[in-house]
Length: 191
Ligand code: GRF
Image (cartoon, rainbow, N blue to C red; front, side, top):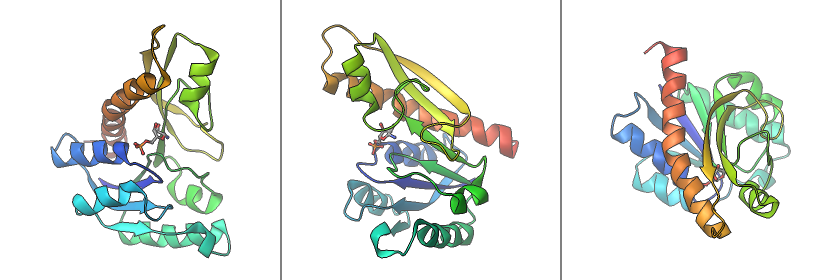
């Protein structure tokens, strides 16, 4: 299975998926890393893992449709089966969605439908909930909507700082994302 990972930032989830492929925990390889924030740390990770990187500035295109069209071409060229969004801070438009319907997933740091959108961990912290978590879902046109593939709860203890919650969430993400990808490969590719 050929995977493309889209990221805008640190890329710790990109790393987790790359490592799972490297260790053969996943019968897959990342054939393309896509970054919409030139200079983001994920680019260093891609370079180190020797994964081809496509880095672009959305501003330098006329429209979302224009850069998504170019992305579609690159993804086809690499024969990508599955797009994995890993902290890609941008809504997916119809140009990309149509090509990859049911073949694009996202990870979000809350138990959706609670706390969608930006800063989900901060939202959970401020709401003083006792349990939050991580969701992996298929991507549709909405923001953090789409059919849920996997979820895992994370407890928030009285004494936890927001930073500590972030650490707990990140650790769960790094397990859950490869597991959800594995499940998707099994059910869709029959392996
Ligand atoms: C993760 O919390 C993910 O759930 C969210 O963005 C964050 C990305 O972190 N969508 P990283 O760049 O993978 O470290």
